[in-house]
Length: 253
Image (cartoon, rainbow, N blue to C red; front, side, top):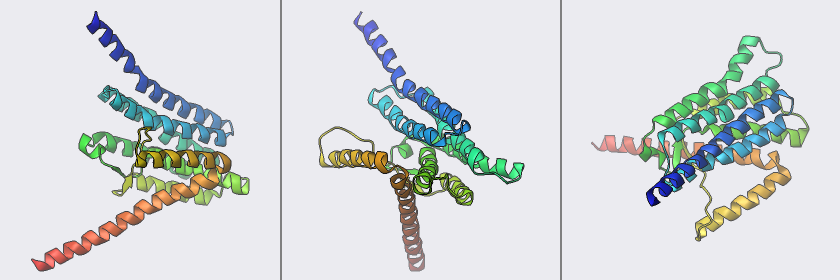
């Protein structure tokens, strides 16, 4: 009887992270509906919530000891909808007016193309690499959030959706960064455990959330650019140091 209860309890827990993943996918789908209905700001807001769900579904699965290959593949499929299809639909809906159909279609395809490549590469990484504090290439949620942050920023500052030329250059840059060898720091997952580091991240998250709801894109877009720029600068600096050290070692031999 006890074993049967334990089995049923574990079976019930298995659905918790998958429900979060499913909600992530639904928010992505409904974001597409809103974008096609000329409400991209609302669609972008849903994507922000989808990124939060995406950050916690895998964490919860590991805490409960129920992470699985199915969960990982399901998560990737949900991410394809929310962070690959959605930005492609956004570009197609807002920023390619006046371009030839084929060129506009290809540019709109960039987030979906590079995003799915990025997700496939991530699934092939071993568990040791995934456990590190960084991820190789910009993640699909970070790329999509940056794109929507530009949308929020222009809407708050100028009252429009921004310059299409700037948006398309941003899309191309984000696509390349997703499949680049540049290591990007993972965002620390918040915890309510005691400790100075956890308290700092928790307070920072609360302050950032308050600032976002007050200023929205005026905060989110600069923070996104700062995050990307810092990681690129750090990678270039470390690459330069390693190159110089390699030359020194080679000349010494």
